[in-house]
Amino acid sequence: MKRIFMLVGLCALLWQTGCQSEKVEKEEATSFLVTSPLAKDTLITKEYVSQIHSISHIEIRALEKGYLQKIYVDEGQHVKKGQLMFQIMPVMYQAELQKAQAEASFAEIEYQNTKKLASSNVVAPGELAMAKAKLNKAKAEVSLAQVHLGFTQIRAPFDGIMDHFQVRLGSLVDEGDLLTTLSDNSEMWVYFNVPEAEYLDFKTSQHSENQTQVKLEMANRQVFDYAGVVQTIEADFNNETGNIAFRATFPNPKGLLRHGETGNILMEVPMKNALLIPQKATFEVLDKKYVYVLDKGNVLRSREITLAAELPHIYVVQKGLSENDKILLEGLRLVRENEKIHSKYVEPKTVLSQLNLYAE
Image (cartoon, rainbow, N blue to C red; front, side, top):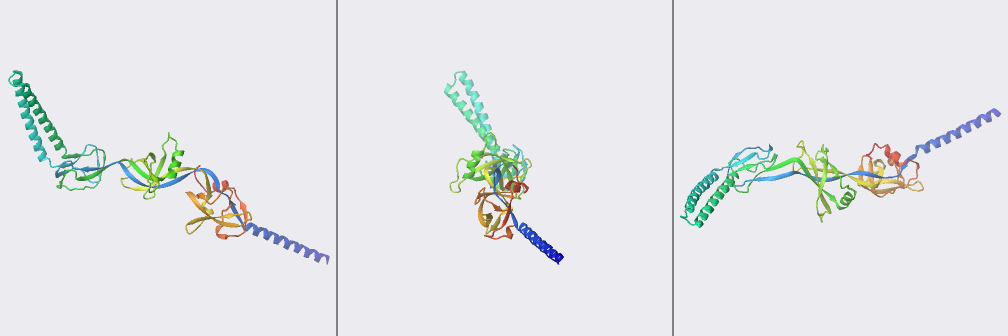
């Protein structure tokens, strides 16, 4: 009988131990990891819509009226400074030059004869002066005719790339008519607009001896191979948008960038005491970001947050959280609003170091 009581007691003890073990395992299984935002100075990458321009982009126009006699270049061709591009029929201007040269020769002969007579006191000094003035005028007419004749040859003012033709061979062009455009793409100017607050942050954090480097994301979402530098900022803000225009200069040795392209400027902006949280600690409702915040009673409360920037695996929080808040890190789909949970706190530095994260 004694042995039976011992067996019953042993079974009861084993059953009680098993229940306690199952209860502990259940509690451990329902423990959720929580952490806090990390306040840290960091760099965020701001993105600005931009317009890409050649450092020189000009219109090539006719300087004289006439028929387009020859075209020496082709659309899209690289041309060198001084290279002949277009020839306007020069016949009339050649005739004008010949006429001016003949008149200059006549004036020269007349002046020399008058000079001889003046030296013998046959004519008055005033007549010699008149002959001299007539010769100078004739020479000026020759120079002017040479200029007009030169205007019939249109040459490249700098190295660049031709755009499409606005006229065709044999066209009658008037003075000032557009023939084509020419772009110098050796360097590119990229313009982008910066809000007033970000402009102030930029100016207060910028070191005067260093130019700020930026990157260019092209239309195909690829980052351009070469970095640019912010060289100029416009004088005035746009009163309608509250923005001010920046200009960054990019080298373009391979000629990949062309005038008129678009892209996005990527500029690193320093942020002091930025609040960093893992992206996986957030959820979205109707395009708004939320986190679960754990109150003092270990009850979950959803809270809307406003983001200042996005880094790889990380959000920078602008509004909605403080450094002392505890937020649910994992298992967001397993809980609901106002639910009391068991939690395990993980240091934010530890959490962020495991996210494969950002540059210091």
